[in-house]
Length: 255
Length: 80
Image (tube, rainbow over all chains, first blue to last red; front, side, top):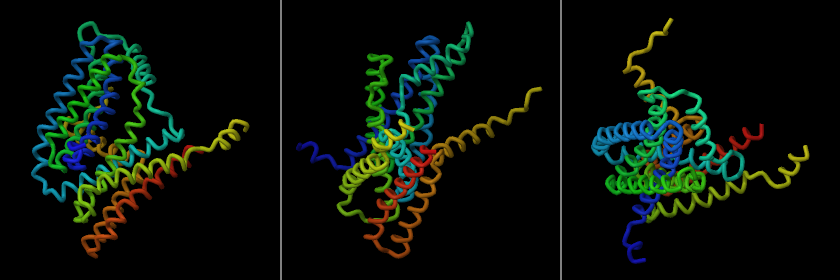
């Protein structure tokens, strides 16, 4: 309790947003790497993942220090706008999935799809380029979202180190869990995690767009917590509002 | 006959542009446009008319409205 009250609310929201966003992306990347490894061998899967991680590290090394030189108000306005768009996209998807209007992200189906895709192409005797490319693309594209989340949230909050450490912990934790449970990544409550990330990103986006435009928030950093509560309630309201009623479903089934 | 491939730098720039287009616009252009609108309205309120309270209220309210419109649009599309 004492520790929680000593940590600014902005830091708690930052850690939560980075951790959940990284964990979700890591689950998606790991599904592809596991599928590649099981079907085409672990060497190409690890090589593809390793090269993707190096490419991502190079991106952080190039763009990380550059972002620090951008004036804070401009950075917060741009980052806030990006987070608002990105967060609303996640939230919209999560609302549609929770209400049953969109199929849930199924890691088992993605795993099987990747396995089928890999099995259809014959492996080359010396170097498995298909497996390498698949693992590279999976890790790089999902990792890019992690990099953007960490860089934007970290630099705007002036806590890039904390954001990077949080991301690393999320990646390692999901990696360990993924290896232990192997093919059971579908049991991860991905939609609930995505919804939480969406709420946190929209909250941060709102806060920083305001800061970038010199809005004085009541309670300063505490406004962030208020936004989290507000957007959580709105999300719940939208899920309930657009969920097809049992009567409609019944009528639809009769038709 | 092999089609001529464009130079590496062109392909990289194209890929970079495509990534950001997909990342920010993708299949929800209404959210992209809405955020541009929200930023413009709050900038007018705060920087031109110098009113803080209206900006504090407008920002989250407009974001909530934009999300609602987008969700409703998706619901209509799902019905079709």
